[in-house]
Image (cartoon, rainbow, N blue to C red; front, side, top):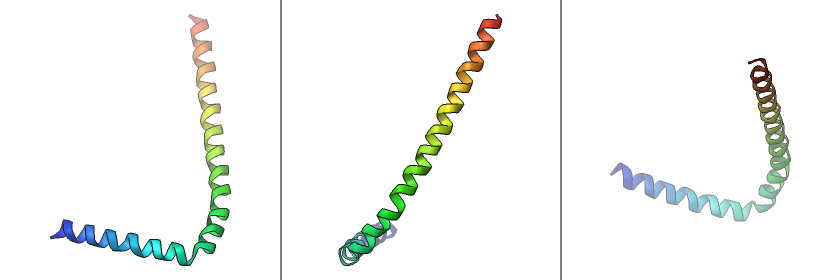
Length: 68
């Protein structure tokens, strides 16, 4: 019974979400306009930090290899 209930509630939530998306499409688009640039900034900073860290690790490994 629990599995059937979860499927029914999931379908109901999807339908309600779709209806609200259609009704509030202007607010949804404005929300995306606010969120997407922030996500790009944070994602870019994380990628930059990961790249710098990887570069530092490669340089450190290179220095240790030259010592041998």
